[in-house]
Image (cartoon, rainbow, N blue to C red; front, side, top):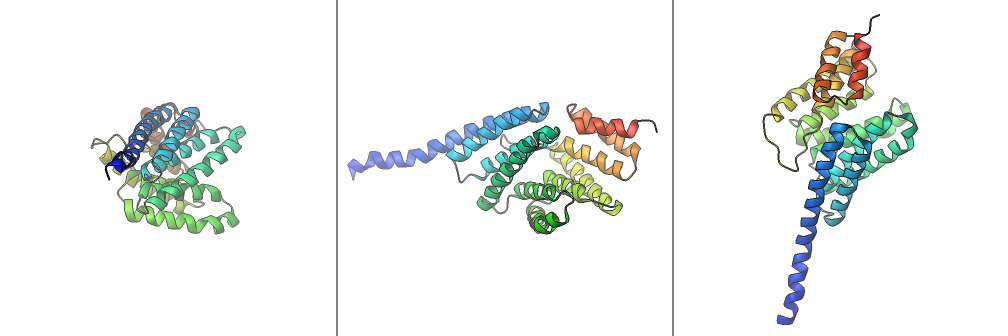
Length: 254
């Protein structure tokens, strides 16, 4: 038994060492993600994604790594979509986000934010297409239901649900439904801001939620309210080009 003891000790130490490496990579990835979000820098989102990918390799059963990988690829996709010439890279980032988040919900079926991100991604895939709606619609509904079942008071869940509703809305009643969800998310973000977060806790989305509230008001023809929310978003995140463009639209003289 004694001669096997070093082997047993090594076997026990290896998983702990892998977890320690994973935690360092995850922490570094979150730091890079936060910087990328503030600067709205696609390259830095890519760097963050690579750090999370390495963390997942070291700890493949850790849902946190795959959630953050999906979040990084999701935001990299949004940043790339601002330039039509980046469409192939944006599509690749979308597929990478779907793959990572699918792994996350397999590891933890109760991970509300991963479900919410998946619902949003599938909603974006529909993009007004009838056939795509028939194919992706059930997936959107499934992940929305799971997100709300496990995270109805999570501000990012409500924000992402509202974002998905916004992208699929086609008439005033649907814009109002999206607006109601986004206003709910805003209140939840305000509550979240009062509580300190842990080092691995997500705290993104508040400013983008304000931008989408502005866009919903704009679609409903309420230009004054839209302008107020675009200004709020820009005060929080001056790099928000969507809010800036929205503010220009609703304040231009007719």
